[in-house]
Length: 404
Image 1: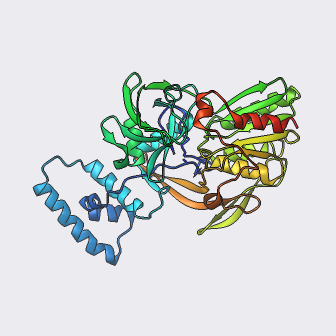
Image 2 (image 1 turned 135 degrees about the vertical axis):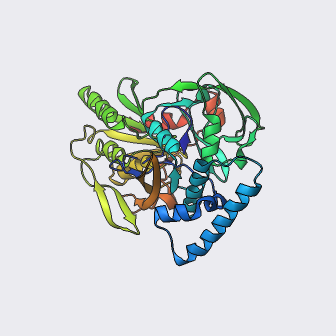
Image 3 (image 1 turned 120 degrees about the vertical axis):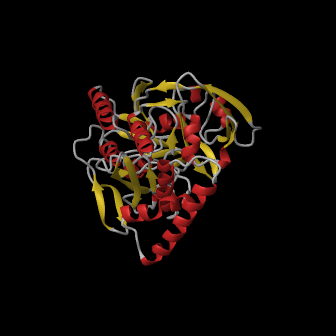
């Protein structure tokens, strides 16, 4: 979840939840490619370095050496030792079958860090793999992607001259990202509409994770795009500002928010929940534990409505579930994405990282986020026709409810 964003703030992906006390990442995650065969090129060297040598792997190591020898003598091309070793690591981790447990090269680890700081160059979308298709999770406000009309749920069929179905998520993101000022051409499919070509000029994009405004003079509106480096300070400042102005009605918009840092999910929830459980962590190798609300929230007595949709994932789902289960909010919109696992990031040296799924998350009432997602109290659909006409029936309903 941590999805991946192809522009500055992403995510973020992030994803995401990644403050992991600076080690737990719960957002839509980066999917990596299988490169098992290349693993053999560095057989014994890799196994020795990682301490994975077993009786069974010794036989495999012989095959690895054989493959390396064949490639060195027969492959009609150049061998890149660094790429081959990274491929071996990716293949080994990918064999677990968990798309959120991934090996990140130094370059990929930096991109993830940039995602959460909001410092990337691209077109401004978060993308993920859904139903085996490269799917737009969320366009970021006021970015080239949003201005070009890309919407949550759009499928990207081609990126320039490449078939997106043949690319991993990482590969697709790298294709879409690029130097500011250059063009990327996408073939996009929106629901049942015919495929269309969209040409977008990449930009350097800096987007804050929190946007606020006062609607109709008495409703505080908070748009939370991701749970990143700036979220804690920004949400606390927004809450304090609304409280100082006597705002007692709040709409928290978590639509198309792919997730981010776990700590930030607790911080955001604590602005609305004065006490009690925010989320419960359950894992095979850890003791179950509950993360509790932090006292001192400025909006714990405000009336709250939270907007969610299919692009709300991970940390967004934790917040929605926590505030709802503590009887502090009404949820409006559509069922969330359903990404309720947490990743711990381990530094491996030379800038590389291993992101490992270590636990699953449950709301205070025991809802398994990954299996069930978070369902709205009031279901309201936002159609393409609504978006094209500039209508937002979900926000309209939220404003109606918060004023009741």
